[in-house]
Length: 402
Image (cartoon, rainbow, N blue to C red; front, top):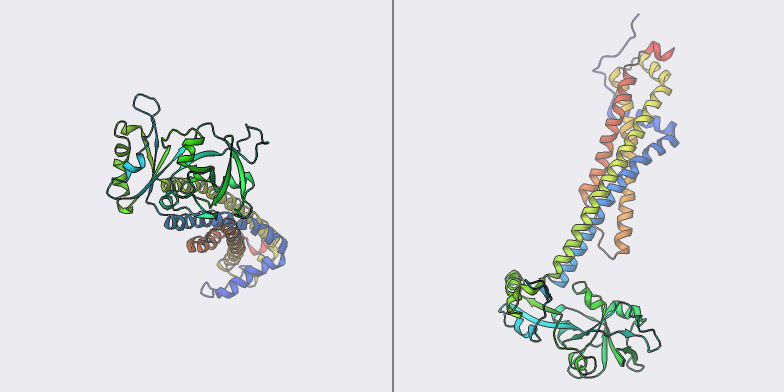
């Protein structure tokens, strides 16, 4: 005696297939949540790994757009013979002779000079701060801004006054300048008055960790020899590459190959590239988590088929076709994974927004990552549920009901 079946033309509407698939999830909610959790973790990791670097890249783009990519730095390098080189005292003035250069300035490290909060602080406690002799036009060239107070000028660069970089000020515990109650620091055996605190300078991080004094007072009190250690050159942006090619030979004609020329914005971009390398690693880890989640869904569906043998047999006995049974369990697997994917996308969005907010970045959520997360999770569900669905469809009604 054969089991009566309906013709394949009697297909269930999509809504009925989805309803049947959701029924299995509703009857075992805890199992469904635990199975979807693996998918959610994998999708959340992948979304966050794609969205966080995108937010970082947007922040970097905005930062470079604000700071500009027209700044070059020149520092002493190694001579062809392997020895140390020294930049001429007039290196900044020589750089200004290059046609597309719009500004040039220099800083020079004062050797053996330390800065301390008071003369009671041990001499060896330097806080990792360098003392630099700076030109008065430094901020105009590098695009720096004052957090508090004023910078070195023609009226005070001959006097024992100092301007602190952002990190230096933080380490010394000085966050602002009050003209009514001037703050003094002990610098290389002399008391200097703090007249300004700088804002952060991403394109000149060495300035952030420095204490800046005037060139004249550095030569008079601190033994500065007048030779710069870094020359900052600002040029027309379209001609930066050309200026970079001739800068070494211009500022140090006697040893042009002993000048190390860099573009600070390239350093920031290199840091972003390093971050993207780590992002690829974490993306792979997210893929592994997604694979583990898919195995969990497949395991759940196999167990579900074994537990619902009587249901399958009864449906087949009442006329359900193999296609309909297969569609029911496949729909359940896709819905289970899709639910995990939706939750994972939501978690990924929240993680990205929270991290971007903590870093003061714009939160960038790539649409392909969001839609792809749901699509990938549904595809994983379809693959994971294919074998259990085919196994359920091939189950004979008499064996299922026995």
